Image (tube, rainbow, N blue to C red; front, side):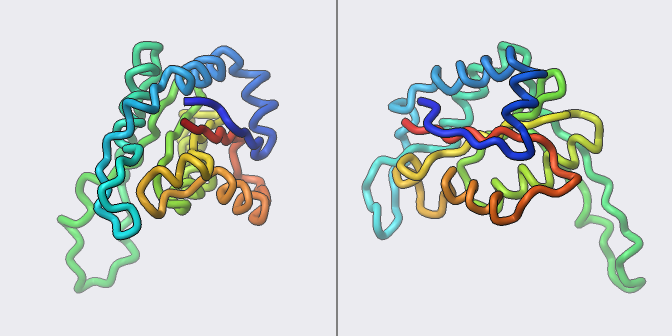
Amino acid sequence: MRLAAQYSFKNGLDEITRRFPHLLAEVKAAIESVDASQARTKLSREKTKVGKLLYSPVTLNKAFQKDLYPKGWKNLSVDCEYPTTHYLEDYDIRSSLKGAFRDMDFVKDRLGVEVQFGKYSFMVYNVCAKMTIFRNLDFIDCGIEIVPVKSLALEMSSGVSYFEQFVWDLESRGVADIDVPVLILGIDA
């Protein structure tokens, strides 16, 4: 894969370059190490792409794991204990809240990384909610979000969001005081 674009959200590029240059180098090396041809494994059944071989998000995520885990990056999972005080007295919620968690794909030395090949709402959630939560829980200080650029997204299942759309959303939303510095990296095959 190759790095095709980058966007600095809340001074993410400056913060990460200053505080985590060695980790940024590891993430960029991981992007370059992913052999995109090995991830074209998903046979489409979609009406507009029937029989076409597409890039598999699962295979791409595993490729990042294969490169980053040996370098000390870890998946971080946090159990969620949801409040129950908001339910009405006659509503039974005992079994429905078991096993809830949030996780971040990769964390190392207070830098969080998410690799996202899903819908645009997941990209926005990662940067505007999850990274803030993990910072508030004292696990990360900054984040990196790795997403496809549009040309790669077109070679995936329909509905996969892409860098250009994500940047437009973030710029239109603006930055809030609670946001975390994040570097958005757009990748292509």
